[in-house]
Length: 342
Image (cartoon, rainbow, N blue to C red; front, side, top):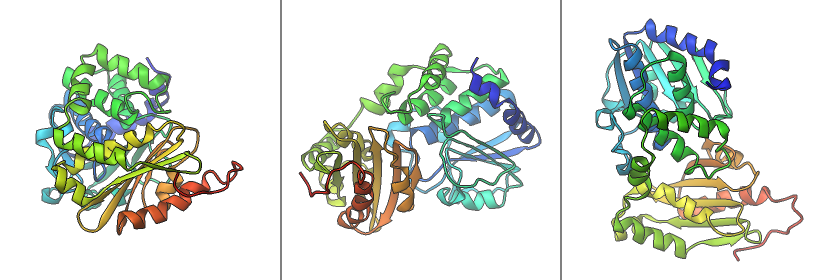
């Protein structure tokens, strides 16, 4: 169906050989999992079960946090196991939506004691080490690669599997609004809908079921938006005190970067969120061709040209002081002189 799926045929066959030679399989995504990470992990587990029903497959959470509320509707989410409690030595460990072990959190220990490893990812940068590494930086989501693997296998694709992979694509393309929403993303999404995915169900759970507490937090974040570089950089933040005052949950607030991104005339958006333990999590989005992934990597994170993130120690002010010069440097050759908030 898709030229990309055909191009990956040899890699898919090598992955199948690894799976066939394994009895126990662990699948894990990165810490602070988003919709692509969770949908892809669960979708891959369902793909394996459909093709190799006798395999012992465990889906892992890389950290000790619960599944974000908006993704708890995904089929299989209630069966995710925290990696810190998993004591098995799997025959095969599959890293999904990441290439670097450092982002596996507690899952890295499981990776180290696995007999064989594989990677399914769409993030650029870094050198991945695994028996099979399928990394396509041009793919809009890891869920696309897994959907194409299902196509390659010719399995019966269920509505639950389709919902999980559709959620992966929808969330990593920003509801098909980001620059990575290319023809492949739409074609795979259409194929998943044809196999039972429900766009309305995914949208209802992920984008239309916010608690009132979250909306109060969103209002506070909107009221703090400031711009730099003649309006090309938009920025806002949320503190631990904001979370406590409104009663909102941490996992819901990552999407607030899109509120900042919506500022007219802005090209780059930064949203900072304080998290317990003296840390600040940053979300970056680019609306133009400017590559913000280098900024995230410089701050210890990673991601894509148009969507990246990082986590640093300190306060919101510390994080802004570290990130803002790097963001301003993206505009250094535009002929504009740097300026303060406007």
